[in-house]
Image (cartoon, rainbow, N blue to C red; front, top):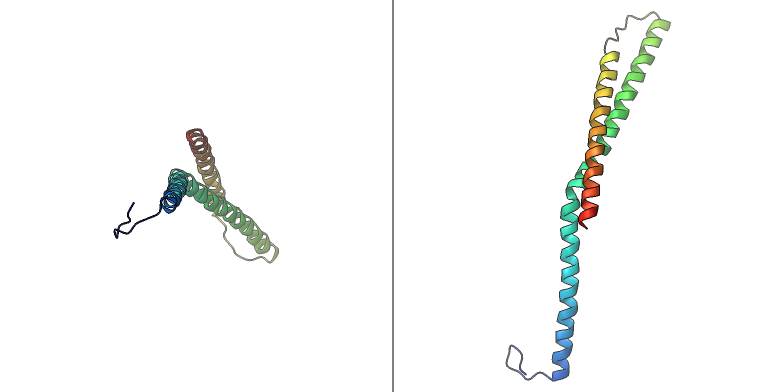
Length: 119
């Protein structure tokens, strides 16, 4: 047998090259399968990132409402003229965000189950 340059190749060397090619092709197929899996799971990963951010925002809204309560208490204690009309609005926003989070969690779970079944 001859290589691309036209030089003679030993049969043993030829077999080793074929074996190496087979191993490399198998590794390539495994890599491609992992990449396809990553692509399929990417929307779920993004959804989980969004949920993490939503939970952080929910915590911040809760903190803001508590700080507003503290500000009102301090205002009363020192007879300050502090108007805190937004407290109810913050809790309304908090409740609305909780509903959105519940919907996203449900969507995430359904997507996770579907992806698991596909694999």
